[in-house]
Picture 1 (cartoon, helix red, strand yellow):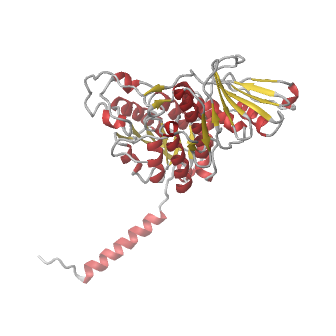
Picture 2 (cartoon, helix red, strand yellow):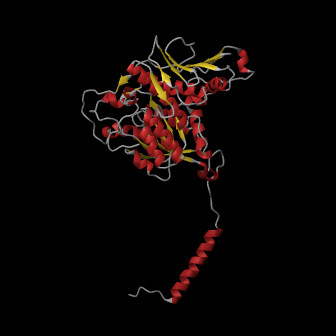
Picture 3 (cartoon, one colour):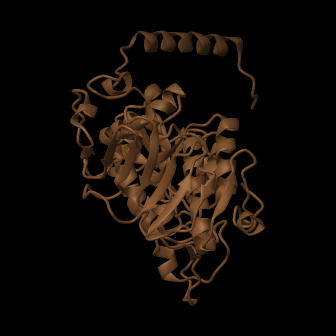
Length: 428
């Protein structure tokens, strides 16, 4: 049988096709209002597509804040634990009434997706910096939980990477977007307290510890828990469930940051904002009577203090100037040296340190390409201050830091703690 068509057959085909095309063009097309952004919905062109990396306890809370935003479309989750992957998928699928949320065990596969704009990184601290910089190189913006780095070297590389790639980075220091903390920092930063003399940060314990190594236990199947991927760039150690579920695993590299880095990621960050997001202090002293005193180049002191706080809730900060002072905490309340500092302003009290405002700040900056409140440079300087204080605490003596060269001055022992090797094959 010939495979050729006769001229008549071709003409009939063309005529039929044209007629069908005209009929289709004239037929009414029904477009759902959600696709046009009506009835409170956000048009697809205005949505920010998001993937999640390491969505456990804290990540689950953050995810809830993201899902509250009408312009977010959550597409995929990556986690080393199958139970978590499936649990997050169920949340997303119920939210969107479909089965479209994809799951991954290797976060690089998620980052390879061209349809994802931004990622939420809420892994263990051993992963934060490496995952963030890998995401930046993949062209993703990111909201990254804290502490965002394990050491001084990572802090510097993180800031440089975000500047070079032009990615929007928001550290999970959500207190920068709470009204009473913002107002307290504004008073200090704008001179309303007079020349700033002291800023106080609360550490959740004044102790520097080494990374954990616990007895070996039976390792789960890789499908259930990918232990090798969980360790990631951290030094290898045998599987132990306490390390798997331990919130403080590898927090601060070879030196576990402990309370100095845990609360410092928030409290020191606010102190850094109060002094104008300047470079970190240049001098750190060994603790005396529960206080570790650091000094900025202009003479202002940064004081890590465990006791002596007004009962205003967790994560308190205090800023003292020559003409007044202010103290704030997670209760949402402020205490000021004089009511006049309010200048008639009504500062909203929001207790419980919610992250919703911080997430909204991030999403807005993804759209405008502006710098969010917890940007990489701000996070870098605050984390360097925490790491340097932790090194002084560990060594039990004063260390001096050169903010231009980013080294400790004439101190080989301290400089060896500025960085650490990453386990193969991971790179920054």
